[in-house]
Length: 355
Image 1 (cartoon, rainbow, N blue to C red):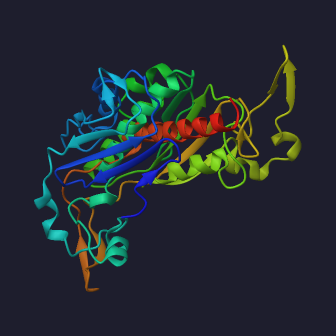
Image 2 (image 1 turned 90 degrees about the vertical axis):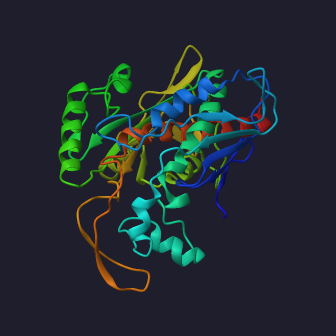
């Protein structure tokens, strides 16, 4: 299956299906000498794993990671790093009744037409479970980026029509929805729980901030920083939209308002504002990179929906099993990890151009 490898110099290849024996990834291009243990990776996986709270799927997966290669005495060796996560709580029988039915909002129909065969147990490769591999690889990328003083923060800033109005990064990991506004977080939780009881789901938005980036990451014309980051983030199945800086708000702005004017303080050139979101001409400008992502409501819902079978016969479907009523809380670490993979790759590429 093409499309399972990401990156140029720091590459990640993921493998496995949601209801197979295991999932995993191989990371190539990681610099040697980086301190790394299973604890570092497990910390990030625990943020993504199912069964965290009342607003996530009750599927219980420990997502315990095993390092198979590329690390010796808790230091990376420069060799490919292979990571394995064994699946432990599959209930494949939950899907046996719908093996010939196309679930609305899912990749069932498109996979069937593209390959002529599909793993109907949880979606196989199209399942969100695959993102655990990205988080494991992203944990390694984050370790490398820490040495450069680069940090990545994602947080839920909207669920349905409830929007966060304040920002306190210290509380993101202290509530079930990973929202930086404690008041909005409680309202979001109540909304998600009420919809889950009704057999439905809800979408939202996640904001992303990358701090500490040097000037110069990104390569014109086709590998602009925002273009490559968009590619990485949009490869996450639940994301349906992305905007940088003012984004679609720029539609009603004048150039005199949107342009970020330059200043020179202590021989350091910077911009007074950050309407562009930290990227000019596809190259990072030293400001925080800021973007916002639209997250769709999870497609697996208990409400009855109209659909068709593989042979085109009409039928009704209510999706059973254990599913997230809102994916925002668990997609936050996935977004951070994909961002880390993009940033480390662009950073290594820049080092081949200018040290």
